[in-house]
Amino acid sequence: MTRERSNFIIVLTTFSSEEEAESIIQQALDEKLIACANIIPQVNSFFHWKGQISNEKESMAVMKSRHKLFSELKDLITRLHSYDIPEIIALPIVDGSEEYLTWLQNETKD
Image (cartoon, rainbow, N blue to C red; front, side, top):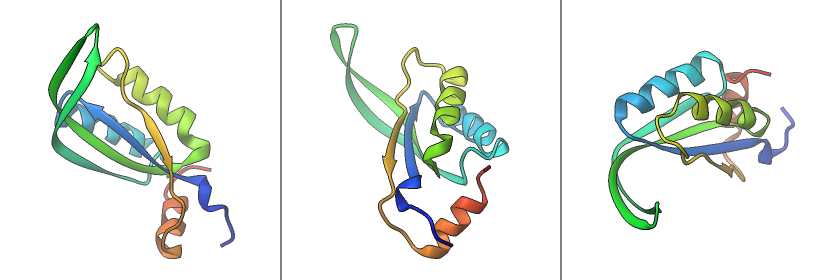
């Protein structure tokens, strides 16, 4: 299958809890906006917020998708997320095994 490798992305998002991450990931899977996701149950996040440096325990999701679905995925995360400004970052997948990328493409909506 011929395709541009840059069509594939990894989307990183942090959540207030593992349960929130699971809920939003399940919705994204149901809508075929992602092919799969990994949850890192606890990360220590340090960030500027409202004029102060904050330190929070969060869960991080690593979601695999396609660039053309990013806008829909971003909208879904924003709508369901508990944060005022959730982290939603897309990184290009510059290369990968042909079998995995084919699977990723087949498991997301057209």
